[in-house]
Length: 284
Image 1 (cartoon, rainbow, N blue to C red):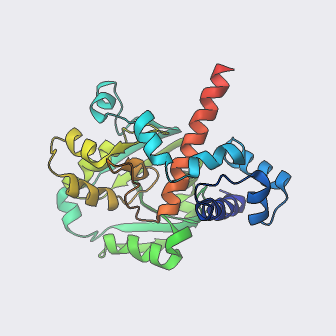
Image 2 (image 1 turned 45 degrees about the vertical axis):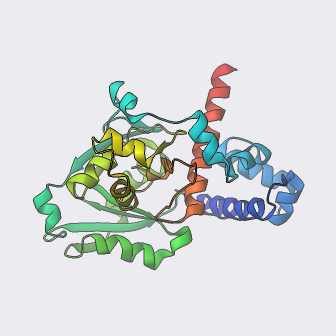
Image 3 (image 1 turned 120 degrees about the horizontal axis):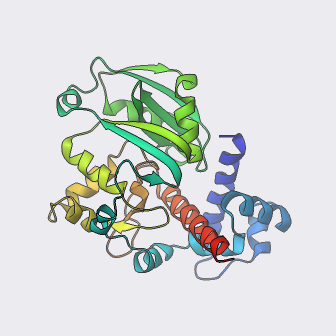
């Protein structure tokens, strides 16, 4: 990804803050552009390029009430998703994901004898730390809110006995496919059996849609394990690709997000806007 992606995210992040500060008062294009220290024309062009809709339209997707709208209009029942053939080998956007899980015995060894390569890349949502083994991506963190050092320390702590080697060139083909959401990438999932079940369920949520933690618990055959599901969602090591940002509370609240709630809101807004833009293009 190019540096412009991080720049776009930072502008969008400031837009979220401006919209929140205004409360229920809609912000005009001129107001938002002024807050971003840009001309209205430049601000409109940047946002239209980044997400495919105008800043005025995009503002609707950034509001705190948007999560409730998604739950009402785009709630995904995961049993139905499974029934129509969606699974961990299905498509996310235009990206084809192949997933391989580490055995429980290997997971219990905390990454011993495992070499994990890492590198920094640009993404739609700020700097992204990508980690992977020779089998595929095993970690993806976003540092716009957390900061680069905490993001890296967080991922490394998940496999404390692994050897970590900086090698962005090795990861680049997978990272570019994953962050650009085109082509094919491989995932090497490293987690406990219960976590893997939850992460696989997350893969069935279509882009632009959401579900609830209780729905995920129901879909994996353990309806009472809502709290444990929430913990497993939060421990997802491959954010964005395993779309934990699409899991909400029943109330419509966003819930938590490991890499910061502004990033989660941005992801949901970006996906919703692009999904609507694609629908409108088809109708036309």
